[in-house]
Image (tube, rainbow, N blue to C red):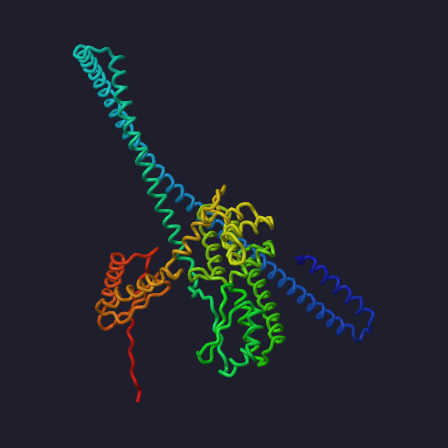
Length: 522
C-alpha cells in the first residue's frame, strides 16, 4: 500500500494542533517548555513517518523493478526458445525440400529410362511383328511345298502324326510304369528289411539250457541214505507223491531228479530241498513238503502270469490264460525260455505294428499269448497252436488273438494281419543271433571274428565285442596311433567287417585312444 505525502503532512499538522491545545491547558510556567517538547516530538514523529513512507516506497519500487526484470527475462527466454524452434523447423523444411528435390530428380531420371525402355519395347514389338509376318510367309510356302511333296492334306498329316505319337507314348508309358513298379518293389523290400533289422537290434533275450533233470546238492553223502530210506521206502514215496524219478548214483554230494514236465520237476526240486534242509525224511513229511512246494509254485505261476499281463497292458486277461503264461516260465524250447520268448515276440509285434500303423496293444497281446499252448502240450493231445487257440476261444478271447495263437505256424486260414505279424515276430525271435542253441556256435564264432579283425590292426591293444555283436570297442595305443590314424583304422575295421562277416543290422566300431601321464612326488 502506498502512503501519500499530503496525508503525512496533514497528520503532522493535526499533531501540532493537538500539542498547542495541550500546552494551553498546562501551567503557564511550563507552557513554552512543553510546547517545545511537543513540537520536537511531533517533528520526530513526522520525520519517522516520512522516513518509513520513503522506505516503503523504495521497497515497492525495488520489488516492482525486480518483478519486471524477471518477467522480461522470462519473455526473452521464451522468445529465444521460439526462435530456436523456428530455426530447427526451417532446417527440417530445408532438408525435406532437398530430399524432395533429389527424389524429383530421380523420378525424372526413371521416367526417362521408362520412356527409353518403352521405345525399345515398341521397336522390339515392331521387329517381332515383322519377323512373324516373314515366318508366316515362310511357313505357308513350306506347308504348300510339303503338301505337294507328301501328297497329304493337313488333316491327314495331323492324323498320321497323332497315331505315331500315340504309339510312342504307349511304349514309354508302359516302360515308365514297369520301372515305377520295380522301384516300388525294391523300396518296399528295402524298407521291410530295415524295419525287421531295426526290430531285431532293439530286442534281446537270454539263452538258457533246455534240461529235463534237476541236480540238488547234498550237505553230505549220509543224506543219500535218508532219501532212500529203509528198504527204499522214502524214495518210492517221494517218486509216487511228486511224479518224478530220483536218481541216486555214485556221484558224491548230488542227487538228480528227472522229469519231462517242468512244473512237476520244479515242485519236486523244492520238495527235496525242504526235506534236506529239515533233515526229517519220511512219507508223511514228504507229502507235507510237497503240498507246501506246490502252493509256492502255484503262487509263483500266478504272480509271473499277472506281472507279464500287466507289463504288456493286458489287465483284462482271463485268469486261465494268466496261469498258462506263468507256467511258460518253466518251459524251454531250443534253448529259449518260452515265457521270455513270448515277451520278446510281444515287444517285436508292438514295434512292427507301430511301423505298419496297426493297433500296437492288440499286436502285443497276440505276441504274448501266441505260445500259451506250450504250457499244456505235454499233458494234452494236439499241437501247441491248437491247444492254445482252443483255450483262448473257451475264455472268449478276441478273434484276432485266437487266430494269432492258432495260425502263427500257418495251420489255419487267417482273416487279419495280426497272425502274420506274430509269425514274422516269432521268426525274428528264433533267428536272432544267439537266441537258439542251433545258431549259438555261429554266433560265438562271429563274436570271436569281430575281435580278431580289430586286434590284427597295427597299434591296437585290445578289442571287445559287446551288445550281441552289434558293437565292438577297440582300445588303441596312444603312443603308436594319432587321432587321425585312429579314424583311418576304425574305417578299415568297419570295411573288413563288411567284407568278411554276415550279420543283421549294423556293427558299430568305437575306437578309443587314451593317453595317461603318471608322475611321482618324493
